[in-house]
Image (cartoon, rainbow, N blue to C red; front, side, top):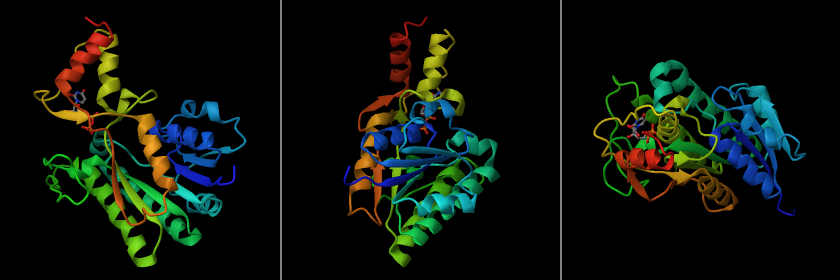
Length: 269
Ligand code: UDP
């Protein structure tokens, strides 16, 4: 393939990362995937290991010599590795805040050193308490008190966005951030509290479905394959540096309706 590029995917064995690696290999690119397998799983990428264009490195993105070597071989970095989910940050706040910010620092230093194009994954959590729909990247942001540790996840991702955009402004680095909304698909696990796999698991074992609050809060769930299609097509564009994108579905469902849907589709009691 004439336009074949080398991509470095951090968090490549994660739920979204593994689909991304697959899509890029399908387009004929070379893929280097690094993952410490803390939340990612080797099974997610097992089917890719035989592909000569794929290389998996089990390692930590804070390991600067490994990251330096990988970035030096790459044209494009897609930085997905992070401690994800509000549940995890409440349990391990120091580790999560430090990891999310330091990891992005390491990535961006290499972006600058090797002139890679870089896409940094952020999160819709950054919209905080925002309620004007649809969420726009120019919206003002209201987060909760710093006494509530859950907000540190959004804040750490905001710092990542700021840092990426700062590299663009100050050093003309080719950096873009993407705010990922609720994503769903195979390989997503319930362990970190994600609602759909959790409801399905509860439903299949005929346990009560745990709807939080009054259940009238709503979310838009996007198929992971569509999310990945958006990321890949952004990575091909030459006009995205210094910009910020939302990636998600626009089809809304309340959590109550979702619970009923899961119950029905799984034929649960
Ligand atoms: N939720 C729920 N029961 C659960 C897990 C989640 O009612 O067991 C709700 C949660 O309160 C939220 C929605 O489902 O309103 C989506 O939760 P998730 O953690 O998947 O994503 P996020 O809140 O980050 O959008």
